Length: 357
Image (tube, rainbow, N blue to C red; front, side, top):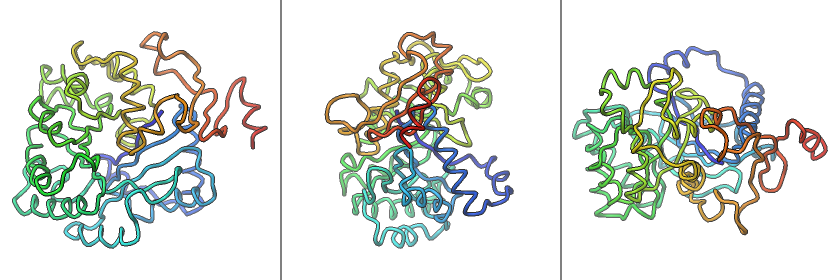
């Protein structure tokens, strides 16, 4: 399985910024425990597309675990520029010796995002200067062959982003770069068609699992009935990855996300997507596994149980394909294997982990 961790919304940042900063040892231990929690859900890899309230040194604990060969899953990460107005300068400095794909099968650099420039982040009315600044950074990234992920929430304003992407695409083809837009729950058919023409993928998460009431209040129930338009995007042939928008906007449990994809019910049982946007169980699982692997440039090595793929798999507590949809969120992993190594075991398999280590 695969998923990703992305940054929080503005309302949560104000609280997060007031929390005491952990020591290096606490950060390493906390990261270790969190990754083990992910292993308990059968996750063998995550994509971190970059937040905007984490400084580069906040990743030190993750890199320390990598150097110690302690990572229990594969992490593909992006970086963002922390200083508004100096994004291009910072990206150029950070990547001076960091090429696309740098790292190994456990920790690997996957480009820039999710905040590429501050003027185009959570801004439905970017100025010409904001769009030009984004163009300069994104054009530079395209020239270097970097993957790029851009956070965008609202379809009513995404034309600002797509206009810039189409401008860049006339100079450097974007399709080979695996660029993507994250969130965009209310993507219209027109928007999806423009994304398809560019070869831009869509990172679709279950953020509405918690946020549906406010979403309905703003957009109305009619729009909610096709939000997000999972089936429509797949029929158009757009690359779609499934995730959780965790771990502050949403909880990190992939089976909650899969259940929500299949029934559209939020945490307070609000009905969202109609039947026309409900995928089959197999399609939902493929979006979450094969689909997400595409964004990590790993679809030829991960996301399927076939000869030649990396030895990543999980033995689950229940059969995802036959369990009642309402019970899918209760599924856990009994045995998680990454690269042929046991990284998590519980229940009747618990002794295997102890023996392995």
